[in-house]
Length: 184
Image (cartoon, rainbow, N blue to C red; front, side, top):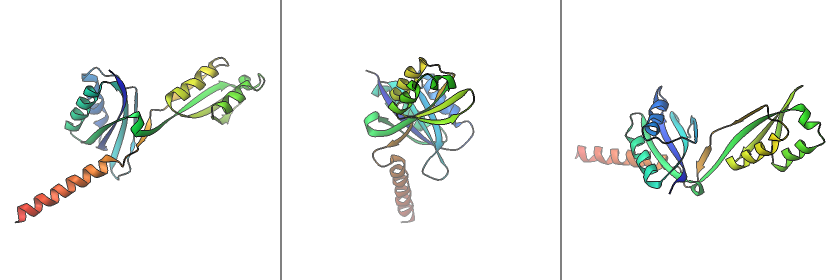
């Protein structure tokens, strides 16, 4: 049975790594639902956050294949209850939508969104939340006109301590033990 998984991939920041990561998914005919890249908490290490809908067996194979790639330090996967995550969505609606009573203004408040910019022809609204929350506001605003809509990919923090730190510490410990054994 397929399920939504969030995969985090830690790499050094080199040209072409994104293509190698995406190729792993393409070869397996897996659609990426969301992809976000950024710096990580560790200096010099880049982080990919990828959302997919696959079986657990398939996500295990994906992570194993990602770990074999050059320039990829380590990858992990998580179920939604193991992470804290958000997306950000921006909506551009016609200014006239705000002059039709206060319906759109009430929608903005009801969805805990905020107004970022008011221009002569449009208003830009921002909504943070899970995908279903940003989609709900989009559906509600469609009746009043949407000029533009964009949603970011998922950003996520794992609830347990970041496993990369533990993984790197274990490598460091192993290297130290190997050096000690070689010197004996």
